[in-house]
Image (tube, rainbow, N blue to C red; front, side, top):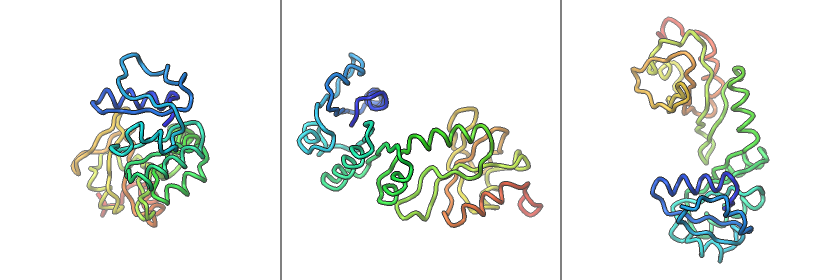
Length: 217
């Protein structure tokens, strides 16, 4: 839902990967952003209107993204799609970070646009501690980006996991995502993305803020 730059980019990308795609927008002129080669359905209407959703094929949908410019519209559409049509993979773009956290706890995956962008800029300017990227519906497990003391460079991933109890989900290395093995060695400028129990998040970051102790090497 939403044929702005984000929605049309998603539609084009998904179709390029072999998926069938429908895109909904209340403004038919918005579809002009789609490339001429786009073969998916263009549905004019509100993304939370059941008739528009049915026309888009929501009953057979694997996933739904609500990426219009309005928080209320995105949340209403996400809830209708999930609760009425039973689509489990639903993502909503939310500009208000406080709202995003509320709906995240309700099990609706959200992307808080302003906060995400500012956090990413800050984290590339200076270390700011652990930053939550995703929480499970219960809030007990967090996917987060962790800062790393230089003393950990040259240590294998298994040592970080043993010292913190966290699980390294992936590394961002030279701009590329990378899933490491336990024996892979941490390099300068690696960005750690880890799964951590939420109540141990601060403890985990404190451990990585200092060089490893002798028993951790």
